[in-house]
Length: 219
Ligand code: IMP
Image (cartoon, rainbow, N blue to C red):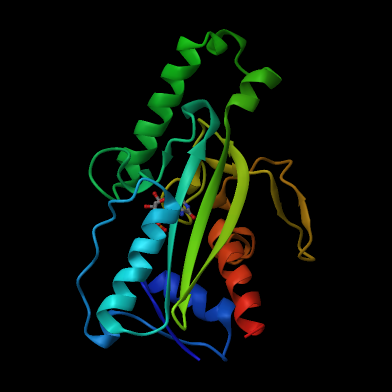
């Protein structure tokens, strides 16, 4: 089976190839001569993911899938969400995005009076957040949606060099033991401290793609 993955990101393609296995040949739009990007004008991850998949389907007329991800922080009422890539202004400026995130959380903590109770359980709960991925598959003209979520909390103490985006300030609730089982993240490691292998097994994106892989196997 051949599927076009609506992305220009080589790391994502590599990850998807690993998850979907040898039965699925993943092509990129660029390999098929399409270098133009669709504008992500949706107001939800679902909309943007569908927009990207539809664009490929219309331009290339071939089965395809797309994904859209974002970080949702409870105290920010779900922001930055669909705007995660450009939360600090310029798109994909990870440093500016993290600064905007920590600044806005601090402001909300002060406004709500939580700052005085810092480190209490209640405040820790306000820092609850999750990464969410929505993957949209268009196959044989049919549209299917898959979701993956990684629950955790935001930390003000950045740590780690790995990953990208908000990884240095995101502490997942669970990590993997050396035997590969999910265990509580008692050392409060950030994703940037986990290493790519572990991240790729627990991430929102990998969960959405695994759900899609399971569906593809039923066809
Ligand atoms: P995309 O839809 O995968 O391009 O993700 C949009 C934005 O969400 C990225 O530019 C990052 O800011 C953020 N993001 C998505 N996935 C991750 C992740 O795994 N770690 C950190 N940030 C992420």
